[in-house]
Length: 277
Image 1 (cartoon, rainbow, N blue to C red):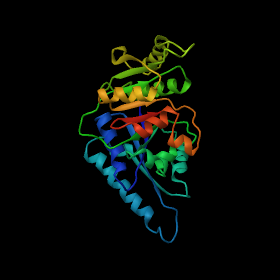
Image 2: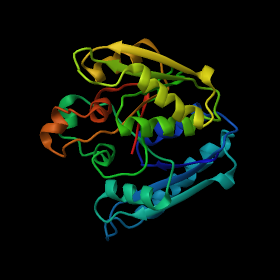
Image 3: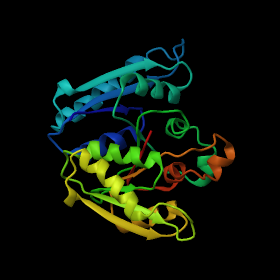
């Protein structure tokens, strides 16, 4: 089934992160439709020509895909708009309106202090209300990356991201899936790893993922983010997929995040982060 991806393009190096990830992850030919999206500064006298510059950037990015034999030109659309003052919210609105299968952004690696004062679009988007998955692509490494680490638990967001991973990879045999459950033996009444894997496997196989492409991994611990990062350090996964739990939109949460998705956005390196709606 065709995947329709909204790729946010900006006039900086982060735009190339998303573009290169898509090409390397899906290979060619593939059943992907791409909309390249650019938000120009708010329309004013000083921003004259910014929409035209954005369109030029989109056309160059579109041509890059065509030159690398990734997609037919008929499957790559471009769209540029003027911002009304909140680029992150306009990206989210486009994501809702276009009913895309994922919205993809480039992301710089930053220190904890930089994260606290982070006004980047990617950092703002994660705090918005969304009903589509987000992909955050960081600077690609020369090291080849392959497969998806699917982080699962018994909560609904985990099962939504499992369904998304299955949809994306059902007809892409180039990547296998490792289901990771971080089991806290101190937690009473929690679902077992076996039960969680059974439900997750159902989502994946319902989307066409062959059983032999699905692996199981259980790690004991009470720090889920730490366990995920340790596993990524052992193997160069192309992507890490996780549910998007509830998080407070506060400065304290930004500096000392409790949400797994926010922790991974801050700390994950190399691999692209997929977050569920």
